Image (cartoon, rainbow, N blue to C red):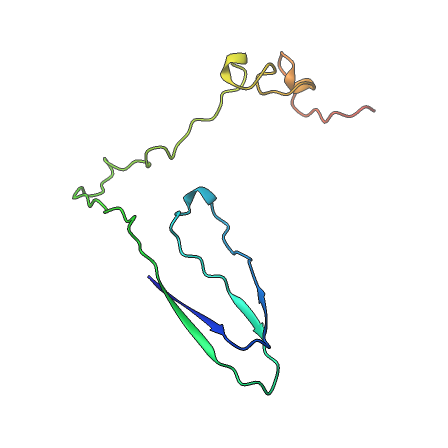
Length: 128
């Protein structure tokens, strides 16, 4: 992978480095050897002769994993989710050992955290 970086050798140019990113994904999916290019914005004073220097960076990509190709055709009998993509949710009300604490996932106060039938149908919680 080659990247070109243009740098001006004129000392009368003021440069501002922009470090913003448009990445909105999961930071755990980033590769450690990914190549980052930082854009440099320059303001040039008029009537100045400029010389530019071009730097070519050859990044070594030695961490490629070979992809295994499977000869199995996709049919309705062998379709399924990827391993680890489906996770069961926590079941509420199973005691303190289920991982939700002493209130078993229902919260500390309120009618819906108490035992019994809960809120009846049509009840809006008015005091009048």
